[in-house]
Length: 223
Length: 80
Image (cartoon, rainbow over all chains, first blue to last red; front, side):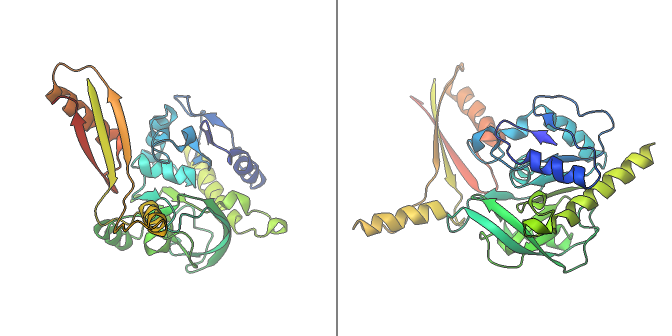
């Protein structure tokens, strides 16, 4: 779990991943290497580097991002949540960009999502078309791609998650996208805040547990 | 050398911030047809010539100051 100055969801995410059986550790942005045997990386939500200039624009130059790039190129699963999604887009690891919400409103509520693709590490525990309820909390989560890029991504099956209700004005109601190789995934909703039905929904656990599955498989394959 | 960078939302891209500004100005009674909100960056840098300064700042724009997916940029070198 990477931590940038201004990250604020890393503890919830570490707790959630731990509850799902992962050994999740915090890694400061200035590190040049990931801990040995790192099987997956998560970039948490928050306001890295104060979100100055554009969300994620400065975090993408963090020293640790090089190591993340290497892991992603080697096929390791990389998940970006909210600000983490913005960073991965700015870093060019995911397509598109996150812009200010269409209605300039900070949205903070549970939203219904539809799983479009289950052929990623992150959605492997979901059914195609399954609806999930997971909270969002962002002011700049309106995903944008121009028509050409959008068409390309749709044809390649990279539009993994859509809002099943109006949320922020994202093109095609896209809530989450993956890269071509399908091992890097970013989404605006916060699965780490939805891992216990007592707190409203446990649907986020479906995504995080699938990530833990993927990381475990990778660790076993390397052993 | 002083260099000013103007970053604008690309033509055709919805600019909710500009829309909100336009709405407010109209409410104040100004007959504003359209408003787009961008960003201005003033830079001071050392360069042997204004052409070289412009080339440097162009790289800065491509690598950090603007996101080419949604923003266009314009560079003004003082005295050039």
